[in-house]
Length: 413
Image (cartoon, rainbow, N blue to C red):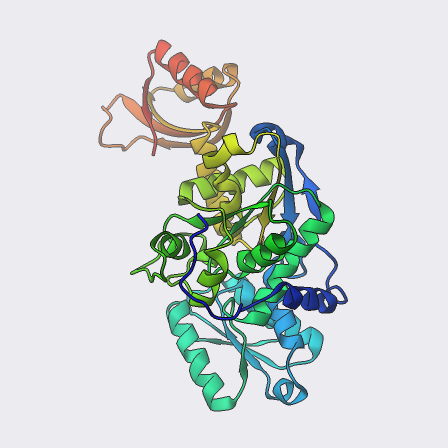
């Protein structure tokens, strides 16, 4: 990667800025844990560690940059208060930092923002206004209010103090694992990996840095490949925390010369990684964080024998989304099987079906008995089954057993 940007301007953020941020934040926030994961290490043939930003007070790394930015305000600026636009984690970061430092905060959130994140932001003491159908519209409204009221705008990533705050993650990693070989982290706007890349490349140049983006939101990846800032026509990913249309020049100038590679993962892979983290690391991760794990399969051969850190930026995922991800993930891994079977419409037929399934060692999660299904004959009835299996091979065994007993089986959706 490592394409040089065209800008020759003075550095937007320096190592000294990040070290200053560390001095402030260490009094307010303890270092997030760096945990070795044995299962993932064995899977990828390396020593794999998870940087647990999910364990921050708001469940996200955003608390760092927002809090440090607010700490740098003058007494006069603090009196005016702050304002920000966000659909979630940044909103909570600004709210937490403002409450901690005694500053009034107003957050503009799009009407489509998850209710959980809206309520959490309010509970942290911020005034929340809903405006616009998406982040861009909320951002425009926040800019208008900032201009009208004089409130200080706290940008989610395109701000030198915010980037410096996020960069403290890099300093912590180097303290916790001084000989780290490779760090992987998500890129939305680029504030987190921007800060980390400055800290790490200044202090340990041989450490490789890999950025990860959702396949439906690759503004920074495309910008680095083309050598200039790119704005996407649209973004499509459930990982809303990294759904950024346009790469900002300041972050592009930081990342382009420092990142060794930028990779992307599709939503299915990100969802699968959320499930893997839940099962194998006992960690609840949002899509914007799990993308860092989702890209590892693309570079698996490069990880052998190395010390690898995956930065998990946040764990604020809607429980309804999480439930769907778990369901789809289990189906994808063959551990949840949905089939439609046709059985005789006579007394005892359903009991014999369930007895047969029990002998195969499957757990029936749901059974819908439908006698009015148009595709069945008068003497037949349709049963839609959701089964829990040990895996794909076991599922095939179950289907074959049903067919051997003369039961018609169709795969469900």
